[in-house]
Length: 294
Image (cartoon, rainbow, N blue to C red; front, side, top):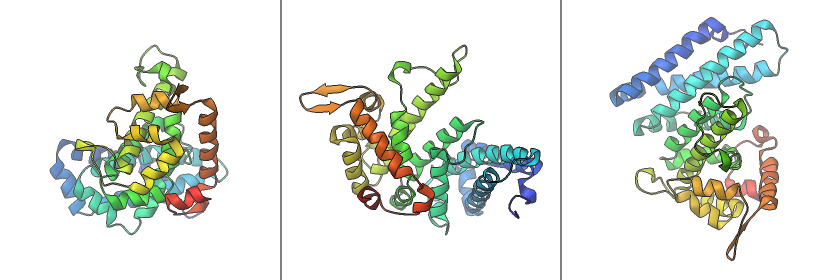
């Protein structure tokens, strides 16, 4: 189609965009003033447009017949998406960056694409764990604005976040996702553990239950939903700065006089997530209460 024939999707051109996005991120990292300048000059809108283009292109390529050309284009698009998500997530650390996101007519589309970076929709094979990490970090920044919280929740992003929590393996605590001399499966699981910790923080901040520097606007509807889905004792742990206790609890069997969490309950939760995530893109935008009523 027209999208796949676009000059900006050629591997050479995509590499230029990718390098530019990475440079913008590093510039903002060096000085907050650079981030402010990026916002002032309308850079956030450009980054969002590019991200939307490359996500749409990725979905189009995946549904088309593969050729050598489309495979190269797909790799280029994936690499560019990773750097764009890193940059947008980094800029959203600043209040002015979040304000620029909220000023976009396409902020709902941005949040839907952000969810796609976490739930596997994009089927990125190279550096997929890095994309997920950057997207999870971005959610923690977005959550400082109540309106961005709302857009994210309505995009369906909560359910892949909860699924991240269930992918935690307590037996590999302390293993680095980039450790040398360790089995590839263990490295993959270490990345899942890292994602689980980021997801716990993102959920805590989306609910608005954390304190101090991590405090964000309260989202009572989402917190009530988490009490229903995770049980009240586990949902209460979302307020903790360190997430290990909650992640261990969710992924082991616990039975006390006041609290029970076991394999059967964990499987029931996974079944609920399967139902909630099925046909996610067709569901469109809807509230957390509406989703749980279905």
